[in-house]
Length: 361
Image 1 (cartoon, rainbow, N blue to C red):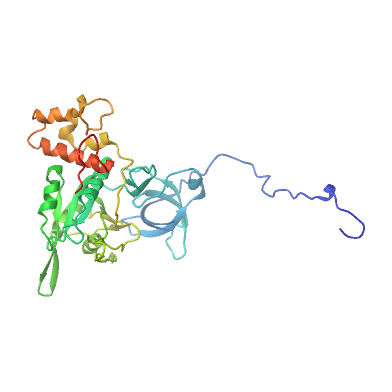
Image 2 (tube, rainbow, N blue to C red; image 1 turned 180 degrees about the horizontal axis):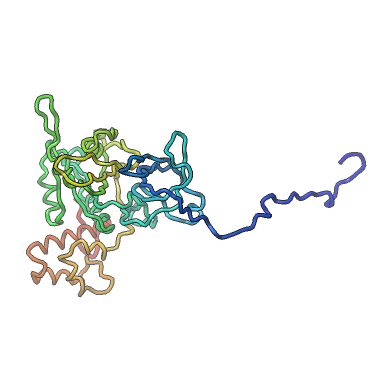
């Protein structure tokens, strides 16, 4: 108020929205000029992607998720995703592109925080196989965790391999016996020292198994995942750590997943392949796992499940698999294979299921 004049509502000035005259549209840009890339690692909302792979113009590009992609409700982006990028895709210092599309995934390795959590987390996308890394000793092998990782791989439609490290420090017989009926390749690794020369026995078999494939390594901390990655990819320089002497568990050294191109190996034809190193895990929730999809990994048992009652958990008294195996239709390995299947199902339940004792190994 100035002088004797009083302000009233007629003095209110409404400034027109400078953007209000823009015609609204539901059309979104098609981004026909988007550049395809492969997500190598993720750090605090920034994605590092490889563009123009295996060409003279190959480069890494840092990107963020485009606003329209975030608003569309699209799922999260994971290491291994194939994405389309726009903006500054030069890969220069301080350049930043935008991820506008995520291509359909061939596979997705998932886990949940626990067996009741409905929220799935994609560990890696588009991998062909999972290598579960565990150690003979220091720390002791967690057979239940290995079972869970195998179940997640088969549920995702991936092949599975077990890498058993530190065989020079302990006898791997117990662990090998636990997986004998699963029909899963087990690669045994041991460190050898001859004078001043150190080597890893079994590393050539690992290289052959990874050649030409997209592989993800999963396992607890302290079992030697990062050490294995450094042996496979000498330029990786992944941090390694020991085992906590109090808890007997490994210390976390890798904080994020990273995809690395394997170097070419003489005598192994074709593309060398990729390997993704992941942070150590202490739990692997399987709330998303479908028992019927898990059964497809046991092809010799799947046919016998056709007589099972609707909704059969395959670990209950009414399950037809018991009679199928008892008849000999599943072959000599049938009983052990059926017990292995049920061990994986119990590992998902995390407790006694269907009146059968859970495997606490």
